[in-house]
Amino acid sequence: MRFALSLSILAISVACGSWSLPLHAQAAPGPMPPVPAAEIDVATLARIRDAAMASDYAYQRLADLSDKIGPRLSGSAGAEAAVAYVAAAMKAEGLTVSLQPVKVPHWVRGLETGELVDYAGRPAGVTQHLQLTALGGSAATPAKGLTAPVLLVRSVAELRERAAEARGSIVLISTPFNQNYADNGQAGQAYREAGEPRFIGPSVAAQAGARAALVRSVGGANYRLAHAGTTRWSDGVAPIPAAALTAEDAMLIERLAAQGPVSLKLVLTPQTLPDADSHNVLADLPGREKPDEVVIVSGHLDSWDLGTGAMDDGMGVAAAMGAVQVLKSLGLAPRRSVRMVAWMNEENGGRGGKAYFDAVKDRIATQSAAIESDFGLAGPLGFSASISEAQAKRLAPVGLVLRAIGAGVVDTVAGDVGADIAPLQAAGVPGIAPLVDGRHYFDLHHTAADTFDKIDPQALRRQTAVLAVLAYALADLPEPLERAPTAPR
Image (cartoon, rainbow, N blue to C red; front, side, top):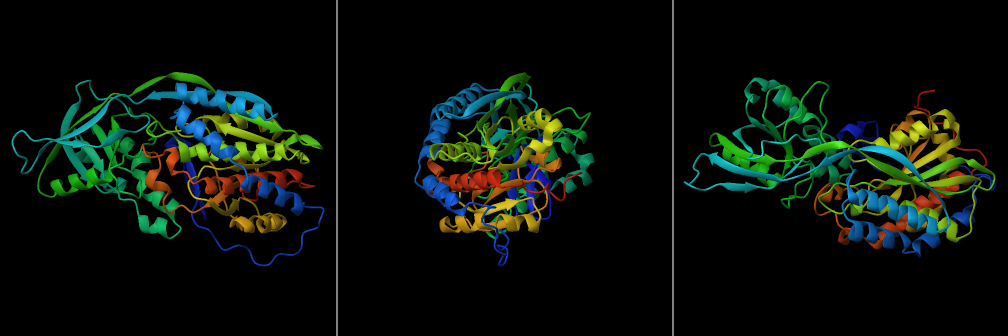
């Protein structure tokens, strides 16, 4: 998932491993004037909603992606199997499918171990195993590992202040995740603050001469789970070994460091291989009047490699697939085409979104709107849109239709609402994302516990319904939404 903050939206940048999340669910707009009957067909939207809520299509597709294919890190066999699976499933529904080539990073994890080998009061012959996982883009240690003293800091700012002490050490940046923020609708802010050490900390440590860098895992539940993710290396900085350490082990080191020097041994053997060939999957439901104009409904197909990517972002991909399948099964053809996109390489490069933008930038006016779902697990409360209040009033009937499933909030925001659609948004394309309860999303985010058993079928049905209703409504408007007011002209 991704990192860039606007007034009410957080998006994790491609360079940092992707993700986007509304920071809070604002109150729904007040009473709105009636919308002309010709603008939005409410009866058809209700049919779509009800059909989506009665369907297990998305749940079955997610089961296959998670249980039969499993992890889908870019460049892996799993990622390519997922491309083939989604393409075949969409073809079987009678949609027009194409594969869009994307060159993706190919980073392989390898071995990863950590061990406390010296600290005050250590009994002779005793060492302690640490739970950790290499960060995407990490360099390797020597094959037999490296041993060095630990420099404990609480933030990137403190690391910069103590840079002279970092040379020759293994730096540990221990910044806790603020679960209180997440419990009060500010999960994005919690992720931004706790995630900064992962996003840029290893690069700062490398510049200071550290031999390796550890960061406290970015997540809200302390179940000794290591949270993976990408780190970003500044231009001209040679990568060093870098890993995420479980919150419990970070706190253990904090306690030991308060009593005296701590040393640990680290073994990481990742490899960065040549870029691999992959694809975005595009599946079109042709429009009846303006088939060359499209509304995108999407999720990202790649995942991290510790779990099976059920919530991040198998849920988003399956819901997008389910949305177009519902429209097709009802025999509906809106004015414009609805395009399901399963993005590749959102997690550690964002190249799928860039490849799509490059393909359409010379005809950007044909891209009417873009919906991205990349915040799974809980059911949606409504949707967030990077549009003006005036344009939001045009979508008021959509919110009314979705109230029946508890998803009636229509929230306007400034800035990106999805990592993969961010290039489109920068060119003025209205961006929309489901607005989801994020209190416990980061309990499992990028961990080995991101597995199919965590998925609530009813939450997935609701998310599919939101995407399907939105996609049809946007594609069937007599005139498309106005270009985003904050985008460059």
